[in-house]
Amino acid sequence: MLYQFTSFPNGLAFCPRKFTKLMKPVFATLRQLGHLSSGYIDDSWLMGSVWNDCAKNVVDTVKLLDSLGFVVHPEKSVFILTKKLVFLEFVVDSVSMLVYLTPDKALKVKQAATALFNCLWPPSLPLSNSINVGEVDITLTSDASKQGCSAATGDSSPGGLCMAEEAKGTLIFLKCSLYCLP
Image 1 (cartoon, rainbow, N blue to C red):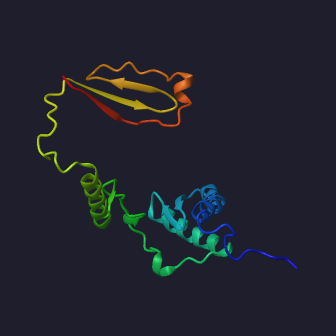
Image 2: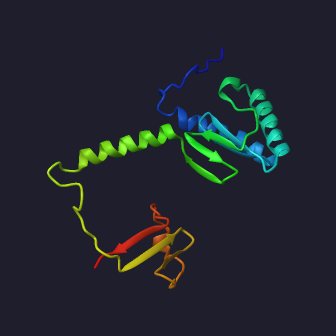
Image 3: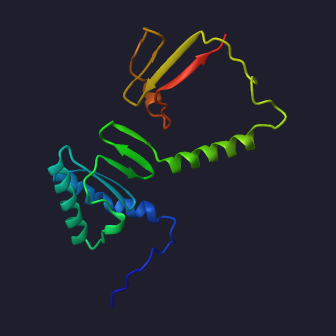
């Protein structure tokens, strides 16, 4: 007799990561067919540069998922090709080439930031003019990755490769701005 689990034996904590790993070969297969697809847990975003590419991507993806025993829910899916789509609480607009938060998510982020600010800011300190930074003398902009790093002030940019020790770092700050105060 063969036994199999009907749910995750270690609880639900690992489910999102395990499902994402389970779906990697599915999206790899779709990429081998020339499709542009992205998945996050049980959400998929299918793309095409022209209408026919996108339609073929949708058809191939639904067929593949169905052949693997997955159920594609029609009421949760968008099968009509569109140039503006809500994906993971972001609006992806391929006409204006913008990605932005949905109004509901933007409101939630604003409320969370306000709650955090109210929690961290001492009530005895005034909210206006509490820090006067004056005029900014120099703006130093940096752009770093594991392949290289550079910094710029105005028209001056030395560029260069990161040292081996720096490239091993786990935290890379991209496009940070540092303001030097007088």
